[in-house]
Length: 396
Image 1: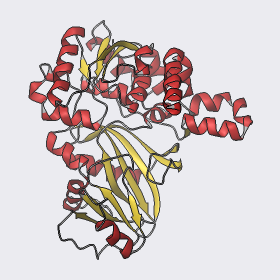
Image 2: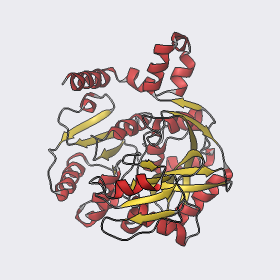
Image 3: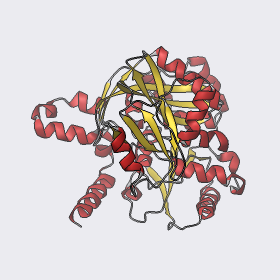
Image 4: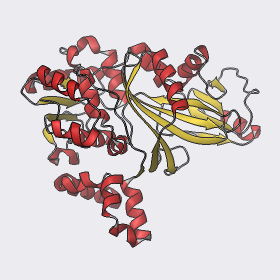
C-alpha cells in the first residue's frame, strides 16, 4: 500500500485522521510500482531518495547509462538499461516494455526532456492511464519556452521583468529595457547560457558575434533578490508547495543555489496561485522569481516544468513532493502539507565547510536534519560506485 502510516503521523502530520482511515479503505494490499524512465539524469537520484522514505513504493528505473551508479542502489527494485538512440519513439517503446514486464502502476518522468517526449507521443503509450498527472502539451510548452511564457504573463497581467524576444537576422528594439540587460536562451534551464551586458556596446558585440546562434530573451536586470516556489498542482490548484530563498550561490549567480532557507510568504504564494491557475497546471513545477526592490513586488522569471535539484531540501522541510505526486496521480486525497522554516545545505557545501571549520563534525543534528547526507550513508554501495566514477572522470 502506498501510505506509510507512521510516516504520515510522525513526519508530515498533514493528513487528518478521518482522511487516513478513508484512504486506508481505498488502498490495495500491495506495493505500488513506480517507473522513472529517465534514471540517468542527476535529479532522478534525488527523487529516488525522497521515494525511498515510503517503504510501500517499489522503484523501477530506465536508464541509457549502462554503468550508472544507481543500478547498485538498495532503493531500486529494478534497473533496466536501454542504449540511447536518435529516435524519440524508442524511448516510448522502452516505457511500454517495462510497464508490461513489471506490472507498473505509475509512470513518473523527472526531467523536462522526458516529459516533452511523453506528451508528444502520449497516444503511443499503451498504458497512458498510468502516467503521472501532467500538463497539456500546449501549457507545458508555454512554461518551457521563456518567450511564450513572457507573452502568457503579459496576457494574464502577472508581474514579470521587461522582456524582448530576439532572433538572429530579425529586427528588434530593446530600447525600453534599461542596462544592465540579461540575455538568456529561450529554451533551457539551470542558469545555463545567461549573460549580463552592462552597456549597449557589449550587447551589440554579442549580437554580431558567432555566439548569437539561438532564440534569446533580452530581459531587464531586477535589483532585489531571488526566491523560488516549488509546487505540485492538479488542474491549476496547488496541492503542495514550498517557498525557498537561496543564501549561498552556486558556481555562478544564475545556477541553482547550494544553500537554501525555507520561509513563508503569502504575497508570493498568491502570485504563484494565479500563475498555476492560468496554466491549468497538473504535475510538479519550480518557479524562479525575483523580488523587485523598486516596485516592491515579486516577478516571475521562469518556470522549470519538472522536478528540481533541491527536492530533497523540500523533503527535509516537511514536504515529500515525489511521494505526494504519486498520491495525487493515484487519486488519493490529502490536505496541503505544512513545512517548517529551516536552512538547508547542499552536501558539497557541507564538505567544503567541514574542510574550513572542523566544528561542523560536532553538529550531528544539523548534518542529519539540514543536509541530504543520510541518503549517502544509508546507501553505501551506490555511493561507493558514484565516487569511483567521479574519481575516474577526474583523472581522464
